[in-house]
Amino acid sequence: MATNTGMTDETGPAAAAGVAPAGQARARRKVFIKSYGCQMNVYDSHRMADTLAPEGYVETHSPADADLVVLNTCHIREKAAEKVYSEIGRMRQLKDSAAGAGRRMVVAVAGCVAQAEGEEILRRAAPVDLVVGPQSYHRLPEMLRRVAAGEKVVDTEFPIESKFDVLAAPTGAATRARGVTAFVTVQEGCDKFCTFCVVPYTRGAEASRPAARIVAEAERLADAGVRELTLIGQNVNAYHGTGPDGREWTLARLMYRLSEIPGIARLRYTTSHPRDVTDDLVEAHRDLPALMPQLHLPVQSGADRVLAAMNRRHTRADYLSVISRLRAARPDLALSSDFIVGFPGESEADFRDTVALVDEVGYASAFSFKYSPRPGTPAADMADQVPEPVKEERLAVLQAAIERSRRAFNLRCLGSTVDVLFEKPGRHPGQLVGRSPYLQPVQVLAPATRIGDFASVTITEIAPNSLFGRLAEQQAAAPAARPAVMALGA
Ligand code: 5AD
Ligand code: SF4
Image (cartoon, rainbow, N blue to C red; front, side):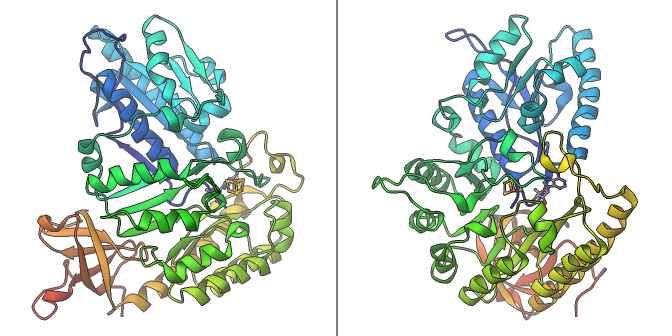
């Protein structure tokens, strides 16, 4: 399975910089947090911001006027780490300008690159003051005090206490500013040890949060206006947290409980491993109305030889059988996946099996990546590394297949009426954008007062990155939701 679905670079209201000693009047300082990679990092960035807020930090969107810059990094593929080092280069200039103006800017590297590289970052990147691994964010205030006293600090421990027990909760205002959808981490880490993946090393062993804490967090979010929760974890359907009844709860059990919270209308979860799709999870897709008909279920390859070398612990047939069970329970389920091309030893025939799998499953969307050797993982030392040009070629072929599949899925939605939860202003003036139950972004002409509402929307047009629709109640009168360009649909 995988760490993430949409890999994003998110900058944003996530925190503030510099921490005042306890008891001292707290100067308002500014923190800029940039998240790379998966939703887990977006969530962690919010928690860091929430932890720094009581220390006097307010978030800024501009690194130039920040007192603290946190780069919350991703190590899953090569480019992600490279991007961080070039971003540190840019921060050096800002840090120098701040120093010229008599102001200190603290630069912190967090996330999986921090975990994997540790002190190496301080050696390689002089502007960095602080390196903090994903399990130690709750210690940030104390670390910043040490930095203020002139130390360079590295903390990549896996502490005994869980950061989740200590990290601050967001205020109602912070939650409202983040919108009507929210992530909630329910488990972290992974025990699967796919041979290409750094996650078991950077995020550690699989650990599930107690259900009562997740429920309490979800209740706070619902009180602040959140309507849709996405439960996240590197291997989210391995969730096995302790329930308030003292028993072990599955992800399905947890979702039934969360669906009882007033205001929580939609649930999603990501990212799942095919081996951990239990019968009760399949039944939840049939029986739990709040659970959206959409699932990210990475397969990585369609060839058994490659799946075995990846240590995926499932075959192509196993994967297809999981999908059949899910579709029997929920025929309209929108599936997405992650694929890796050019894994060591992948032959042309293996690759063709992967493309054929895309055609056979019919994905609503998928992410595809060229294999990138991650130091310390078994696959990095395997013979038969695939040459870069071959990887490039295969990636292009696979992406074309994924695009065909995505378009076919979207075409089936054309003319249908779906529920959309409006999240924010859309691409063009007067539009809002929201998500369909299948996670497609839908642009609709609607007043801003409807942000946070559900509406029945008829899909009128499809484009590569969005669907377009109109409010079903205005169907007769409303014009198309955007200028009539790029109509790929009917
Ligand atoms: N090379 C390329 N892609 C990778 N992924 C994870 N590790 C690697 C790697 N070494 C991809 C997988 C995973 C997604 C989050 O990133 O497809 O599901
Ligand atoms: Fe997903 Fe495998 Fe990595 Fe675990 S080891 S996070 S299952 S890709």
